[in-house]
Image (cartoon, rainbow, N blue to C red):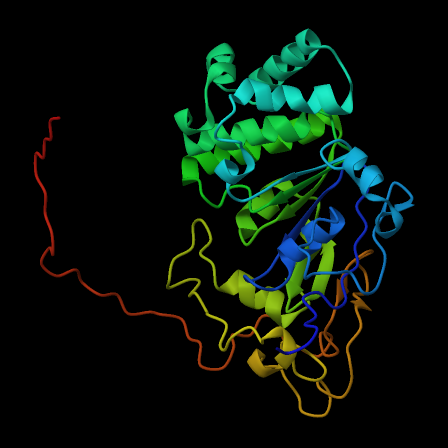
Length: 343
């Protein structure tokens, strides 16, 4: 209806061997599209119209379907948001795991079973033999995600893509999955790209971070550089809108980002974040397309903001204020005592 819609416009990154990079941003900013583009797994209506994706020196855009099949699930693996959607409900877990070494390494069934069982142990699942005999629906969400991780790592890929791997899991299971992936990545020397909106997860697991907004990378650099010296208003807005451990509403009030993410076919001229940014200057921020600009003193730290050297990054945005008054609690709305339930 609107013709071609650019989901991702200007995104560049380099991932080194054994390095973990995080991609963060709001829903709809293009994070998952980037990871699917790397896999060359875009839907029929999606296509790459510019730029190149090079994996181990090979241009992914020039590979045949047969060459891509040899890479997917072997040298590049991907873990999706919903583990149940990645597993065949009609096949036992062991059969699905064994397919990886059987197809990519051409090993015997006995060797494939041995490797699959060893990997199930590596992802810390109880009673590995029973897990191998189970169907996916017989496992919990956390167990399913560990099986998917085991499947992705069976071929010891050079690059592992994780698209919101803990979205459907509760906090305690999420912590275990994050610790597991981090440890296995170090064990196998696997490079990783984490796609997430969870900044805490990125801080815990990644070496570098790229912040995306409306199809563009707006800030990128080493984790410590970006976290300690943010140089794009959107990055700062993301961090100010989430609670931090040890902080409260009096010492660190949460500040939301005004407005909405622009639709892909309605992006403004110049800075895409301009209409939501309280540092926006007419004629400066919307004069022309803004490139990534190097942040002085931090190697590899770039920002897509023409005013980052002029902004007071310690000041609160207009209208934001610290909450000093304390509200006394009133009468309980609900109170439950000694509840018991039997089946």
